[in-house]
Amino acid sequence: MAIYLDHAATSPLRPPVLEAMLPHLTANAGNPSSLHASGRRARKAIDEARETIAGLIGAQPREIVFTAGGTEADNLAVKGAAWAATPRGRHLITTAVEHKAIMNTTAILERANFGVTYLPVDRSGRVDPVDVAVALTERTTLVSVMAANNEVGTLQPIVAIGEIVRGHGAKLHVDAVQWAAHLPIDVNAWQADLVSLSAHKLGGPQGVGALYVRRGTQLLPQLQGGSQERQRRAGTENVAGIVGFAAAFELARAEAEAEADRFRELSSRLRAGLLALEGVSLTGHPEDRLPNNVSVVIDGVEGGDLVAALDLESVEVSTGSACTSGSTEPSHVLLAMGIDPHLAHGSLRITTGPETTSADVEAALAAIRAVLPRLRAVPGMHPKVAATA
Ligand code: PLP
Image (cartoon, rainbow, N blue to C red; front, top):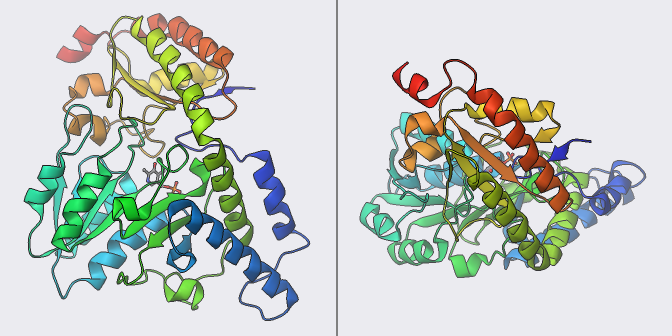
């Protein structure tokens, strides 16, 4: 078995979650829109899951819209809110470090004549709430800021941003996909109007997520079809997925507090082990960060080569975001943080999960220690050589 240290990419389905899902894929399967008993059973299962998820984030059940994952939730939030508000303006604000599910969505809106301000971040990846206040104009209708960064783990000052946005009257969207597994969410404390969630980042199944939509928030549906999800998201609901999402979220929240200390301990061992190596620097905020995320840049190696070499040693990690892996461009997040592009090529993200032990962490560090000199010996990859190439 490989040592899996890529929970920010996907956190494998927890066994009790699978157990909760199975009946809805087999004996209890039904279409929630059907009027017969099987349909009603499926509807009831969704209603209960909706209630659970709403309860975990301080929302009302009717404010939860199930989607096919975090990407769809982000698309629905940004496009849905932006298009619905066009009579009032066509200006959006987001940050330079968002996930591609936001970045590529705002890029499409720019092509449709929306103006988008991409807020800068500091060296730790944090947005300054003052920059949000400065960027807001009369025509701004939506501000979209992620709660926790998927690459470097930095947490954003959402409460302060929420205060500013509420005072202005624009809507606030928070991508909480990475945050939800580890830290509590209260949509009212955030003063958020829209919040994206994804099940597979917290031990649930892939391909299911949710968008919290505050009552009264105008949203133009992005899928046309039946009247599911109160006409906000057409399509037959992923019943088993939704049940699994609720079970996983409940489990993650129940364990989060106790787990946070364990994650911090594992992260601190990883950081110490990595910093003992030459040419390694930590990325992201030193304290305000996801407890299970360790991210670094390593001089003189290509992150993708390191990930491949570690894979051969049965250690599974990432260069940053799963979606950026395989691209030869350094991550937009690291560049926005002002990290030298040459150094940004050597990014490494290690994210632990419920099954990770200290022995796993030690084995991963040993593997990194073993492969690094080999990679650095590859001609053309020495920092000085690469810098002048
Ligand atoms: N937003 C963030 C911050 C993410 O990390 C991810 C997944 O990597 C997404 C959105 C997309 O979620 P999903 O994989 O469920 O589409």
